Picture 1 (cartoon, chains in turn orange, red):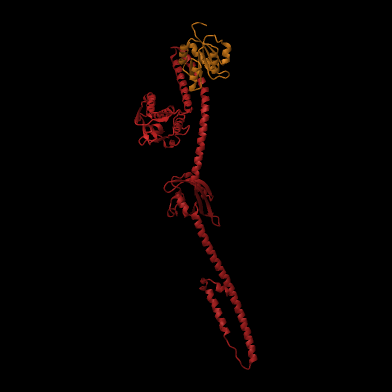
Picture 2 (cartoon, chains in turn orange, purple):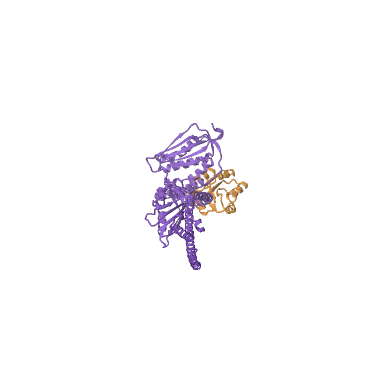
Length: 121
Length: 457
C-alpha cells in the first residue's frame, strides 16, 4: 500500500453497491476494500487500522447503527460515513449525533461522497 | 204472487207483467156468473156440477199457468236481479280498481299492442307524476317517447324487442321527466293476451327507485373510498420498501457510470456522452422515487400561526426558476389585510407547490397561455380563500369528478396522488379544496383555510 493513498472501507450488504462504489473511488486514487456485512468487516479490519468507513445503515445481521456504536465505543477515531436507501429525515440527524462524519441518501452523486471523504480524512 | 210484490219498480213496465194482469181479470169475471134455480134441479145440478168441475179444471189449469208464469217470472226476475247485482258488482269493482290504480305510488300504464308506435291508452296518476306529463299528453302517445330523449337507446331497444317477442320485461333504467329531470325507473312490462293468444295490450308498472339507487351509490362510493384509503396505506408501505430496493441498484449504476467517466477522462467523447445520459436517467429515476416517497409520507401536522401571503411569496420564489425555464409568468394578487392563519407550513406549502406545478403543466406547450395568478382574499369571518388560476387547457368535464381521486391522473408520467393528498391536507386544516374551469380559459384551483382564532379581527 502506497502511503500517499487513502484507505477506504465499504460495508454494504448489496454486492453491486460495494463493487460500484469501489470502481468509482479507485478512480480517485483511494485504496478500497469492501465487505458485505459488518461482522466480516470487524473480523478482517482491526480498530487501529487507518481508513475511512462508508457503511450502509440497513443490513441483515448487525446493522449500520449497531456497528457504528461499536466503533465509537471502542474509542477508535475512524471516520464513518453512513449511507441509506431509506428516506427518513431523522436519519441524518441521528447519524451525526452518534458521531458519524456524514450521512448520504442513496443514490448519491459520487462527487459528494469524494468531497466528504476528502473533507474528513 | 209474492214475487210480483217483490218485483222492482223497473219490472212493472215490462210486457211480461201486463200479460199477467190480463189473466187475473179473466179469473174474476168467471167467478161473478150466477146459477139458475128451477125444477130441473138435478139436471141443472149435474150441469152445474160438470160446469163447476170444468170451471175447476179451467181454474186449475189457469192456476197452473199462473204458477208456471209466476215461476218463470220468479226465475227471470231473479236472473235480472243477478244481472243487476253483477252489474253493480262489476261497476263497484271497476271503481275500486281504478281507485286502487290511481292511489298506488307505482306508475301504471296500458299500451295498445295492436296499433303501431305503442300508443298509451291508460295511465294512472302516479305514472303522470313520475313522467311529468299530463294525462292528455300521455294518452295516444308512443310509450317510448316518455322515457325522454336522453334515455339509453340500447335499453329502449331491448325493452321494445322483449315486448315485440311477447315476453315480459323487468329491469331498471335511467329515465327523464318532461322537464329533463332524471329518475331511476324500476320497470315491469307484461303482455296481455286474448283467448286466442294474440297480444292485445301491454301493461306496465314502474316505480321511482331514485332514492334507493342514490343510497346504494353513496354506500358504494364510501366503500370505494375506504378501499382507496387502505390501498394508499398499503401502497405507502409498498413504495417505501420498493424505494429502498430500487435505490440500491440506482446507487450502483450511478457509481459505475461516474467511475467509467473518470476512467475515460477526456477520451472517447461519444462514450462519455452515453455515460452522461445514463447518469441523467439514473437521477431522473431517483427523483421519481423521491417524489413518490414524499407524497406518500404522512407526518403529523405541526400547527403554527403564520401569514399565508408570506408562505405564498416564499413558494413563488421556490418555483421562480421552474416558471422562467418554462417561459411562464407567475403573478400574485395578495390581500395585504389578512389575519394570520393556523396550520402546518410545510404541508400547506406542499399543497401550493402541487397546485402551481399542475398549473404550469396545464399551460405547457402553449405559447399563448403564460400567466399564472395566485391570489388571496378574506372569505367570511373565519376563512381565507387562496386561488391558483391558470390560463391553460382547463379540465375536461369527464375529469372534473375524478380530479381528487387517488391514482387519477391526466399526465403521462403522473402518479395521481398530488391532488388527492393536497385535498386531504386542506381538509385536515378544516378547509376545502375545489376546482373550476374559468369562464374564458384555463382552470382555477381554490382552497379555504381557517384563520387563527387569536388573530380574528
